[in-house]
Length: 251
Image 1 (cartoon, one colour):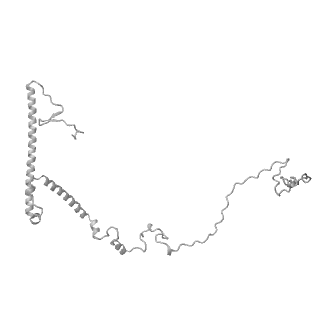
Image 2: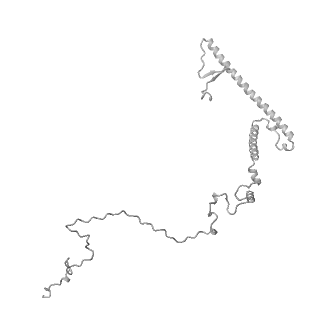
Image 3: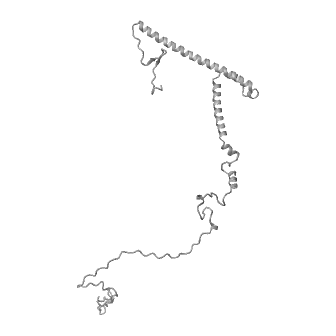
C-alpha cells in the first residue's frame, strides 16, 4: 500500500516535462530587430519612397550557334534562291528555251491535251468556214425534211411520186416527174382554197340577206328593228358578235 501512495514523477504525467519560463528560453537571432522595436518617445519610422519598377535591361546579343547556309546543290527548282520563277519571264524549269524548243513544243502532241498547232484536228477545230458549212447544212436539211413530211401528208398524188432509187439511175426523168406531181399538188391546193373562199362569201351574203329580211318584216308591222347590243354590223352589212379586245389589239 506504501508503494501505491508514493508520488508519481512529473515526467511520467501526461503533460510531460514542465516548460521553461519564457525569459529563460533561448531566442533565435534576428527575431527582434531594431526596426521592429517601438519606443514610446519616438515617432514610427517612415517608409522609404518606393521607386517604379524598371524593366530589366536586355543583355547584349550574344553570338548564337553558327547556322550554315543551305547549299544550292540540294535546293529544289521550285524554291529558287533569287526571284520566284512565277515573277520572271522564265516559265519553265531548266535552261532557257530556244526558238527551236518553242516550235517543237507547239507541234508536240501531249496526252489529254488539245491538238497541237499545224495538225489536221487543230485546223478542223479552228476553221470557221467548216463550222459555217456544217451549221447551214444541218439547218437546210432540217427545213427540207420538214417540208417533205408536210408534202407527203397533204398531197393527194403521193402514189405518183418517183422512187428515191430512181434518182441515181434516171435523175432527169425523176426530177421532171416530181416537178409535174408538185404542180398538180399546188393546183389542187389552190382550188381547195378558192372553194373555201367562195363558201365564206356565200355564207356572208346569206347572213346579210337574212338581216335585211328581218328589217323589212319589222317595217311592215310598223315596229322598230332593234339591233342586239351583243352584235355589230360590219362594212359588208353582216352582223358579227362583238369581241372584247385587250389594249385594242388582242381579241
